Length: 122
Image (cartoon, rainbow, N blue to C red; front, side):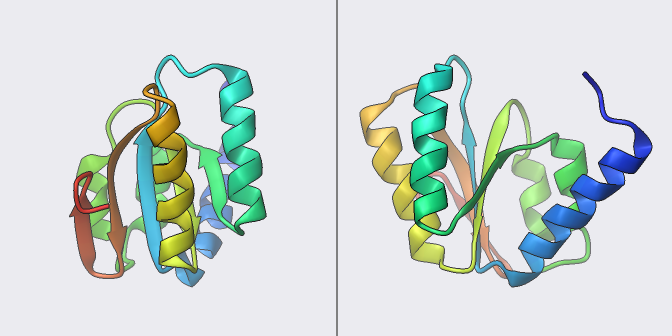
């Protein structure tokens, strides 16, 4: 089900609010991942204080425009889940630890303010 314009604006506003407080954003591809695995990952992220959500790439591009994370837009391709946190270590740790045990979750890249990172750097 697609979002109407008001819902899209609300999502962009929500993500923009998260990005203004963020010190790190991590992108990971979740293609083929089971719903139960995603639920476990979301619970771990929530416990660590990480904003963790599957979002439309175009909406996130709008939210990060004119922010220190704008360079990340080039990496937003495919089905991605976004981890956003004020604690750069927390978001990387949650996603990296889960990816070690689940080969369906692939880290695609990330960013810290004014610094874009490759998957290897994350």
